[in-house]
Amino acid sequence: MSRRIILWDTLRHTSQTSDEAGTTISKSVHHPVVHGPAPYESETDEPRVYVPSLAYFALKSLFEYPEQLHALGSLRLQYQAPLSALSYDVLRELIPFYDPSDPDFSLAEVDPRLWATITQVFSDLPDTFRTYRIPLSDKHVPLLQQIPSTPHFSLITILELPGCPELTDETIIQLKCLPGLCALDASATKLSTHGVKNLSRTLMWSEDDNVTTRERRGSWAIRILNLQNCPNIDNGIFTSLPKFVLLSVIDLRGTQCNPNTCDTKTFRPSSNKSFFHPNPLSSSLALLSTAALSDLPVFSSPELYTLHITSLNHKIDGYGGRRVRPKPPVNMQDAYIVFPPSHSYTKVKKEPSRPDTDERKPGVKPRIKVGNSHTLERRRLRREEREKHDKNKEAWYERNDHWARDSASNWPGGYENPYDDEEMHSGMVEDDLLSEDEDGDESEDGSEDGSEDNGLDEDSSDGIELDLSPLHTRPLANVTISTSSGANSVRL
Image 1: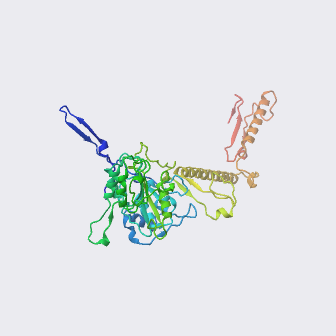
Image 2: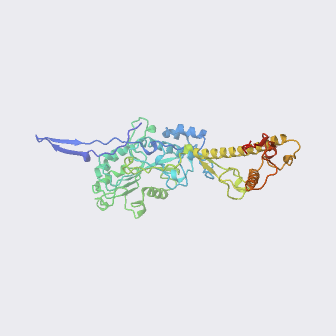
């Protein structure tokens, strides 16, 4: 893997001090190690939207080698946007959190190699995939710079570092590792004419005896250079600019340059302000592309994609870090969703449904069901309660019928069976029994008040035998009531 591109001004981080003997000591601080993972390297718990397809595994195996996909030639797959949110989308299969309707969607959490693979394999992608923003020190930037431009695909790099204190005459030579650099904004920096000359010296050819196989090295592709408000730039810059053979626009406002006092070679003032600040570099490149001749296009292919670099390092969480994508309130691994049949929405009308049951009346519009394991557990408990209640109800009716049949079979002879009527309920109403008992008590109370009872004599020892079995549902024992002449007592 190629080394990271690090801009670090050692002189700016060097301090001098002296010891007791008067010896001068210089202390320099080296650039810090890049800490923390990139946003696309952070662990996520995004669930898979679809069952992995063959295209998924093929692209996943290719994305580690984006610089070799040009070997496929003109073979490209046309991307077809899904007709609805429920339709299959290959981009969402590769990027589970991708949402074309989300205005806050960012490619920052997508691996740049995967992005480069998708852009080289598919055509007619959404505009969201046209530009990938990445810091200069990202470990994959050198790899992406090895992707060649072809008649079917073109990848350019835009570097915007206005006012960057680390961009100096010494550190600018690190930009030689950006062969795809098309636009550079170095405004309001410490760059001088010497720094631009140093950058021009990085433009060279590879050492190869065969001229046809020789390759260019360095930032040959620069077309727009913004040096506005760089006070150390003077007229000497015009001797270095011709080496950038594709350079078309340069902004020298706020510098010491005076085009009227020197030979500017092939450059002349322009009245078209759309090429200069504050117009973005991407817009200036698009305007430059439209102004070019049809037979001499600015870029190798109309399928143009951009690496946009606006910072040196990834931002660390807690110090202006990246925006963390909010997680759903329910863990997606403990959730379910049930979609009704599609024809249900066209053949039924919309009516409210019962919340306590899954059964629906004919003509009721089904709804999308969502929930998790707790929802399923509550539904299971309610269903078990209903089943227990139904079983107890059936058992209660069955037990009463059984008692009624047993009582009817044991009914004494000579008496009318009250259960011949099928509508009769089993058992006797307890209130009727209680009322009869109260009547008996009243008769006994009447005898105590002085009324004579002709049925019993003091000297009589005869017993009265009563059969109370017809008053109960079950056979009862005979009760004998006798009187004693001596004690006037009643014995049961």
